[in-house]
Amino acid sequence: MDHVLQYNFGYLPQRNLASSNLPLATLLANKRPLGAAAVEPVKAKKGKVDSRAEVNLATEKRCIDYVRVLGAEMVQTANSGHPGAAMGCAPMAHLLWSRFMKYDPKEPKWINRDRFVLSNGHACALLYSMLHLTGYDISIDDLQNFRQLDSITPGHPENHVTPGVEVSTGPLGQGISNAVGLALAQAHLAANFNKEGFNLIDNYTYVICGDGCLQEGISSEASSLAGHLRLGKLIVLYDDNKIQIDGSTDLAFTEDVCKRYEAYGWQTIAVTDGDNSVDKLEAAIERARAETSRPTLIKVTTTIGFGSAKEGTAGVHGAPLGHADLANLKERFGFAKDEFFAVPPDVSAAYKACGAAGAAKHAAWKALFACYSAAHPDLAAEFERRIKGELPADWKSALPSWTPEDKALATRQSSQQVLNKLAEAIPDLVGGSADLTPSNLTKFKGAVDFQATTPEGRYIRFGVREHAMAALCNGMAAYGMVRPFCATFLNFIGYAIGAVRVSALSHLGVIYVATHDSIGLGEDGPTHQPVEMLLALRATPNLLTIRPADANEVAGAYAIALEHTTTPTVIALSRQGCANL
Image (cartoon, rainbow, N blue to C red):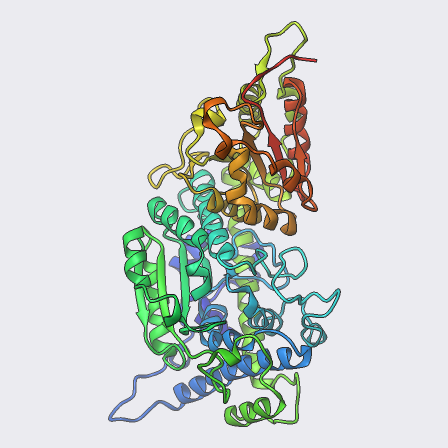
């Protein structure tokens, strides 16, 4: 265990770490090596390779190869699923879980954990394998029940079903866009809560995505905004396997992805042999982590279905390998072909050690928070309130009210007054508009814009990016400690509806402010008239749609929305004046 802690931390934490009163910065400053046996493997001399390095490399290769096998076994047992990407992306997942990510399998909701998003959610056999192997509450039986009714290993990841799954992915492009929201929330909370010597919030957001994610327009919207906001703790590993359902990506996707992302303001790195060059992939991730002023895209060229007889073809994308191919795969990688779901002891020990090291990191964070609480008690109390998902005491008393004698207001105008009061009472209320702030009336009094230089700001300029706006809010809600809202015209919720649907599926309490709710838009004409939109929204399960009749109902709508933490709400608001009833 000491060696694992040394490797993951770079120092040995105190044995009774929970009782430490030292900030993490102090612990890091006092790090000590284990001795000659614990340092990095000795470099080869005169062409010889250090024996310890050989053992480590051999174990690492077995871990990666077993992850490939396990994913293929899950799909074969279910007789449906997507083995190819799960097998091709195994080296990326192995490196993230074993060398880079901080996480605690026994407390998967630790607020400062690194977030991992599998944007190509069809490859979820990979995600479930990593969660099981590192010690999350996912059993081998759960893996055997992959894609079965009522299992906790569904056919695409669902955040409220499986421990360790951050966001629901499957509709391509949603996950990488959620990740921008996760990174935005991290930057905002760090700016508001971190103090000198106390980096409470400093996690990274890691993404694995595929060609399909980057073809979807939503990812372009979200990535453009991420570059503008310089979200340096966002790292995307792009699985460049050159295969999609129809066949080669040459059929429809020949752009230079790295140049596009450079234009967005991202750092881009290419790893040309993602199947075998673990050292180069590790160096790329290290370089990405060192770049704090912009997000990073790592283009990792892989072979889909690596190890299968069908590797490198569309045939391995969305169908089981077949029993003969799976048996040959196991033999190729050195595993018994007649054993199923039998995790080798050395692989199990290696990954369980990673989970234990993550638990120790969590313990160090708890010690840091204890010191933070003593130094900054008011901030610590606010921090804990938000983690619990509680609203401030007496927040409802801030809600304004109107009488029939008061002036008739358009409900978008009364919404502005309600937001002004709520934003003052609820500091975790964060949001903005898709370039319609003067029309939506969503910028509350005293609001500071969230920008790269002012991440403490609570008002987000999403730009004309309705779909990404909704997906970013899903990511922010999934992160926790903020209550996101976003706004556009009711008609243009249609641009965002894919992500709104994911809000409902994911049980995320995002508030959608949708103004100009009727055909009474005058000269704007039918392109702006939301004739069918209310029907579409009201037909969506677990989506609350409210169309207030007057100012008091607007206040009530916000109160209901804020209290429904697992149900998103659309508040449809008028351009026309409405008498107070």
